[in-house]
Amino acid sequence: MTNGSFLTTTRQQTIIGISLLLFVLACATPCLEMSQKSDPVWYGLRILVLGWMGFLAGQFAWFANPFWVIGLCLLAFRKWSAAAIVSGLSLLFALNTLVMFVMPLPADESNVNKTYLVQFRIGFYLWLASLAMPFVKACVMRNQSRLKHDPSQWGTRSQTPYLH
Picture 1: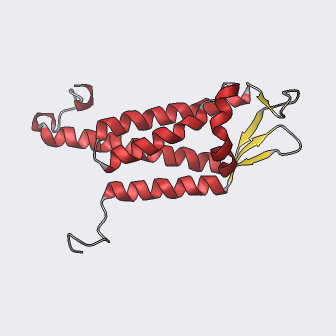
Picture 2: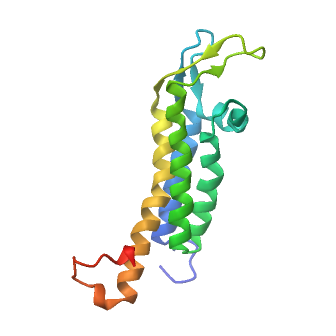
């Protein structure tokens, strides 16, 4: 492939593409199974569209999505440290989903009925994988770039370059 070819891709572009594909698959598949009888399975697209309102009920996991997008952009621009931090924040926000096992969410407009998370479905795991990919790639690239720029770190186990 030539340098100017539109088919030329880098590894981070591949990671970004796979992460986007996993996110789209997460939107198209069931993500959460709730305790309410009328509508127990929530698909990813529904959660993506309505999830921003979760902060009204103390649920902040939806806010992992904007951090994920910012992390992807930072990864594309080779800002490894910033991408690792922002993607890590994305994963931390995503962990807030676990609270739904014990914290009730309103199941109707009048807040009379409550619903709890019963189990995760495949879409949730696809979503987590899409969030984790930029984080892992940024951490690996950050450590590789530090090793490349500091030859004194090569082959030493006593000094870890990521703690400097």
